[in-house]
Length: 581
Image (cartoon, rainbow, N blue to C red):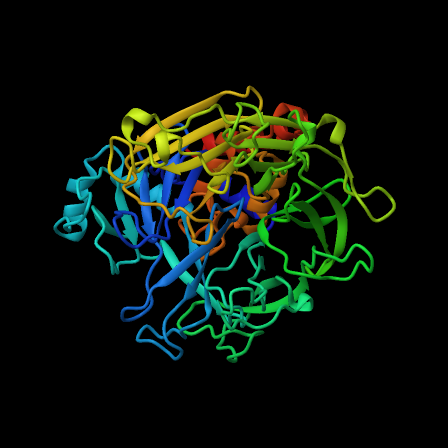
């Protein structure tokens, strides 16, 4: 549909209807709970509004397989435009097809429709007593460990666990694909990043680990050391039962998996050949607008500071090599140079490409705060992703570290470690790139609330830590990185169709090109900002209402559309809208 068609529609007489029903602009964080016991939000994703962390907005139950099988939910990633949350789950049932039409023993891809869930919550739940609302919507409140919680849990309609205040919301989460799992001995995949709605990249388990305990696992094979696997959406249809096509039973989409390279970050100093076993911790995808270079930053537990490496992708998302990296070295930020820091998590600022490393203070006796300080966040500016020699240039001279203000549990509350000194974990973190803040999630079993959660927010600009303790998420988090307790960040800006965090004429072009489309399944990417499946005047209203709004920090050097052109375009359209009344 061309712009002229949209102009014609705007000029036509229309009945004045209600305002578009859409989720509010803002930033949201979420926590995926792998636990299945002692929790109201078990095996669910819990959503928070960052402006009020005292109470979750709601949870979304990811789902079970048929019968009694359940998903070992693990890595998550987010579509930065739509806000869709992708969850990778390992179906740990017995090999075969279960009662739900799914093949056991593979990796399932779930998609949570975050925008739609927030819109429903704001239109039907917000401002009510969730317990009353839930009873009216889905029957009596089930008995549970914390059945008086004041948030609801959504699902497609099937609750294999009892959740307080259950509400059926069809379509809020769906299994969009299945791919075969490799022969790795571990149940849990490591990490996954969103590239685009048709491509996710995952660092899989290794095909072999060193058999130091006589467990009978396959011998170490460096050539198969932690694969990059590309998950790609293809035309709908059943796939073959192999490592490439996956299974795709009972889904509305079909995805395939392909091997795109291996980490092989442990090499022999003499021969430079791969040896040993890499231990990837986390990854973060980044596309550099200045150079066109795209790739994945990874952290790898290596001792002596851990390795931080950038793997470059080609146009088909193949891993084509590394552009360099560095070792996390505390000597730049703390006295003593003991270099004992551990890279627990990694993020990239999408506006300037700087690398954000969450570094654990465990064992770092010389770090700020004395022995065993709280984790720190180290920011590494990147001068360029293309230095002309096939590498990149990290600005180590201007790298800096910000420490989480010591927030160890108060010994008087019976903290979870001896003397109440429970260290916050750097692995349970997420990065709000709009406000330049890192969120730390921590279980507080010794707090005032059973299964309570503590959330600490570290502002990287000011160094200030703001803490929210005993948050009633009613969840018992695992105390090991091997399980799927993972956090993430979602930003929503109505009118932003291309994901550049600015509402401008580029977004209007997307709306104009799709105007009149129905059955839109890709939400904001098609300019369906109110997530009703149609691209129409309601979406135009949302775009026009936010026109000129930018979430890009001033320090990132955002360049808005020329004011005269923008005002001329939207001013004329607004006038045409007024004439219809």
